[in-house]
Image: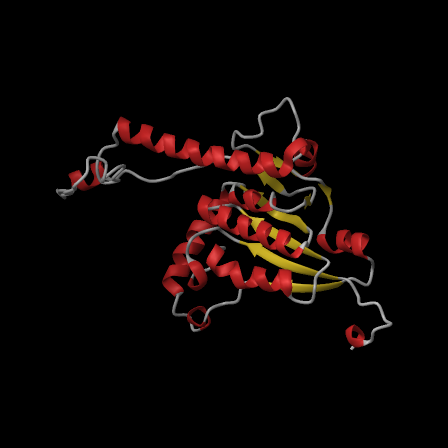
Length: 267
């Protein structure tokens, strides 16, 4: 009612978007974070109720580089179109793709025990050629194109395939570094290589310019916008298939992958 009374000043509003979990291309029907799954949530956060700011509550160990880039680009596009400042608040971890998204904010705030960084790229697979050979299983692969079966896990690893993969990873890593440098700019510390894939805790991350300070979402937003600031919380909605339990198998696999990513940081 207060909004419609012209001589009463409306309370400032901060839209809070929770970004929790692994980043993948699973879309709306699989748990985790993806550009498609977050599109409507981010649109609502930036447009509904003329928010004074958007606060990103981030707890992600990373995942897909492309999805991280797409989500980050969407956040920046909406922020610039709507002229809304963005603040990122790191919970347990904003690492790898999680940090890629965090740097899209105008400021990054962390808990003293938060883990930030991991500005690197990883590719993990397995080799099962010895196993299938021991069990008398013959792998038959026919391709048109010399490189079509690159890094086939059921065949011995080839040096040329590894070199080709390394070139791909280096290019993705360069894109990640460019994002961090373009967004953090002069805030980044000198004299230490921040792009080795290493991580830093709370105050260490602040000292290196990876975050702007130690602070939590509610008190920091109250400090900026007043004690009467109103928080509007947005999160990705569960699909009908998820609510009915029909996406169980996909979600079970995604959960295993997500736990493995979090486990890399001792979480």
